[in-house]
Every structure is written in C-alpha cells, then in structure tokens.
Image 1 (cartoon, rainbow, N blue to C red):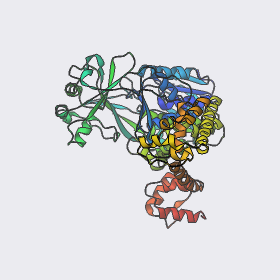
Image 2: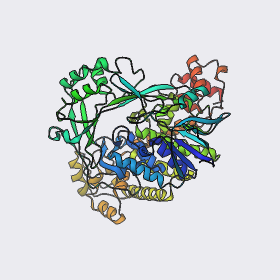
Image 3: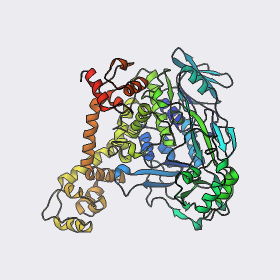
Image 4: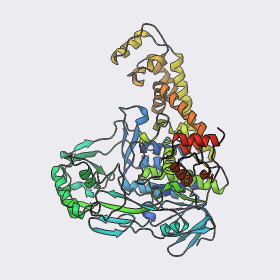
Length: 622
C-alpha cells in the first residue's frame, strides 16, 4: 500500500494537523495525513467559533503566512465581530461564529484540493526510529509507513479519558476512541510526559429555548473578514444570545459536587485557568450569584446550540436539572451532556523553536500535545511545524518568528522557554510588542517572509504590496497637504479639541486625540484623494493607525531593536553551564535543562536573573 517514502507524515487531522499538512504540501513535500477518522478533519471539538482576544490576531497571521484557517473561517462564518474596538488598535481582535459542519467540510475539501496531500484513516500507535532520527510511523494494523519527517498533532486523543460525573471511559472526543501507544514509546525514548484536562458544555436543542427571555448578541453592522485575500463576505448573520445563571442554578449544581470528578479526586490534572468549568467558577467565585451564559448556534440550519460558559463534568442529571433553572432554558432538551477529558501532553521545553524535538531528529510536535488550548494556538503551531519539517528535510534554514514579529513567535517562545504546567492560552498581555503585532498588519509583517520560503503565493504578495503602497502614499498625503483652519475648526470643536489659528499640515491635526478618519473624510481634499485613488477600508484603517500611533509604534520598534542585539548573541549547542561558577544554582539548572539558543532566550527563562545574564555576556566576550 505504501511502497514509496513520504516527505512528511502528519498524525492527526485537527486544526494543527490540517495546517501542518497544507503547509508542507504547498511548499512541495509529498505529505500523508493519517487520522483516526477522515470525517472529522478540522472538527471544532468545542465551541463553533474562531478568533477572539489575541486568537484573532493569530488567525490573521496564519493567513498572512499562506495557511487555510482564515479562508475556511470566512467561508463558514455565520457571524463576525471585531472585539475591543473601543480600545486602541493593538487590542482589536476579530472573532467569527461558525457553522460547525461547514467548517469541517471546507477543511476537508481544501486539503483534497491540495495536490501533494494523501490521506489514510487509521490509528498511529508507534513511530519508526533509526538511531536518533524518526523514519516513519506504524499503525494499529501493523502497517509501516516510511517518511523523512513526522509531525505529531494528537490533540486530546493520547490516552484520552472522558469524565461525566462518576462515570469515566476512554475517548479522545465524545463518540471517538482514544489513541494509545505513542506516549509509552516516547517516554521510553526519554521524553517527559504529563496530563492535562479540558472540558466542554452540553449541546441542546434550540427549539426548546425561549430566546425572548435572553439578550440578543448580533454581529457587526458592517462585518469584516479574516483573510487578507478576496474571500466570502457575510451579507446576513445569525444572532447569538446571552443569559445568566442564578443562585438557584448554583445550589442545584452544588448538589452534585460530591459526584464531581473535579472535587472527588478522579481528575488529578490541571484544566485551563481562563476557561473554567461552571462548577469551578461557583467554587472559586463563591461571592458571585450570577455568571454569563452565551447561547451560540452551531450553524445556519441546525437547531443544535452550544451553551458557552456552562462547561461541566458533573453528572448528566445534575447538568440537566441546573440548566433548566437558567432563564430561557426552562424547557431545555439535551442533545448531549457536557464532559471533561484528560489527556497526555509533553512539556514543550523538550522542543526547539522549530517545534522539532531535541531528542529525536525530524520529529515535530504541534497543538495540544505541547500543552496549549484553543483551535488558533494549535493551527499556528501546525503551520510552523509543517513549514520547518519541509525546510529541514530539504536542508534549508529554519523558519523562526521572533517575539516582535508575530503572536505566533510569542506563543512558541513562551512554550519552549518557559514551558507550561496548565493549558496555555494566548492573550494580548503576553506580547510585549503588541502595538507592532496588530491584526490589521499581519500581512505586512509576515507575507514577505512566507513568500521567501515558498509558502505564500505571489497573489498574496502582490495584494500586500498594493495595500502597503497605497497606505504609505496616503500617509505622505497627510504629511504634505495643508488644511484650512475654517474647515478644520468645526471638526476640532466636535471632539473638544483646541482650535487652530493658522494653516498647518493635516498629519499634525490628524494625530490629535479624538480626530478620526471619518472626521478627516469630511475635508474635500481628503475625500477627493480617497475617491480618486479608490482606497478601500483596509487602506484607510492602516493609514489611520500609522498616523495616530506613530509615536507608540516607533518606541516599540526601538525597544525591539535593542532586544534583537541579545538575540544575535548565540550560545554554543550543548554549552556546559556547570563551568560558570558565578551562575546561580537555579539558573544553571534551568539553562542546562532548556539549552537556550541565544542570550535573549536565556533572559526569558524563569529563574534566570539579570546578574546571570551578565555572567553569560562576560563569558561570551560581550
């Protein structure tokens, strides 16, 4: 069946695996995607939504690199919102509600249209390894498939264990069996493994809900999209709704606490801090008598509804009784109860920045196997693993994004340098250069880099260059063009800004707080320029941000350039830190374990102090 050797084998067809397979194949690698179920490629195992705070930035970065997630999100979206518009542009985050079935279908079709991707449905329960190099995979039927590189994207399937009250059973997702064999083999190789936990809420019948008692949550009036390419635009949207728990709901939930696997010791692993179960919320925030519940449709036509905010592993009878006491849910009918799932992961400090393992060459980990949570975090690791697997087997330089270049760079550096003992979720606060890493400029930051390595296609580069050119010319127009005080003062009065007495350049007045592009478009010179040059929304937004935040952007760029000097100081591979007696014991221990590649990476390791960095700099002759 498999006489030839593949370039790359990707194990797992979730968000990480799908992006990994697409990236490797689109760069020219003959790729095999092996998954336990070909019908669940790109499955949204939890809520039917993409993006959100910081996650939306990641999706746009994946798109800028030439990945598929944003395009598929646009094709299957049923609602779009730009979150945090009341804050500065560094915080703007796109989010889409999706049709779950269409999302998975679009992923399957996109991969089938990718010429160098082959598919095989079976469980992989072992790796083929010769010396310190992976050479393929072995399936549960004993089929050996050879390859030059392997990407593991097993999600929650590695020894997955599902909990509902005092019931527990093996599974990687409700209705699907868990994957066995890989964890045991990797630990025999010397890898460290651990256990993590995540959960999901009940799915219910939307026909049994009373939406008149809930608060509608509509999408944006003029919805945008995720992909920088011309893709599907929403002409109509479906509303989500919001309701709340109450003290009665909390009391009913507490009745099941003695049967809760979270509280009776059955679940020993750590769950996501920022997405706790409803029982965890009640326990941790005992002073609150109400929590938000978001009622999210699963698609355009299905009546199935996702109860966001009610993730639980309590017994199903307790889930049902408590949910019936939520306003609007009095007549609720369950499709399926919520559950928690425990699964194996491998602490990511065992990886290089390329996501290749340190112990076994040409073996890459991506997604929840690295201790992350979220579709977006998984997909971003998948595309980077697929890129680097292709580059490594073709003896090209690795592709590594720095912390000032992408949220993806922040995510991977955090994992590799700091590790994680709880499911890692991306937030804007994790990025020290978030003014540089906005969702609106992901294409400007990353498309040229991706084009250079052969992933992003020329049409992306042309579109990006056109946007960049028009934005820069528009900014220059504001710098070169003067305003008439009689025209500008009514605008300044509207925003409670001091009037001007003499003419000056538009850039100066545009920079003032409260003055927006919509104000400037009231000026005849500006509106004529926009009409003449046919400037679209993206160009107008880019120009406005560059004008309004020029000082902040320049400051962050300067700070990033300073840090880059430390990034350029390489640490020799397998450097013996034990000979540096001036290092603290903790720093020596951490540095020996993580083996940072640069002084900059060493400085970000928890437990390594500035004085320890000084010792390293002295030794390196700096």
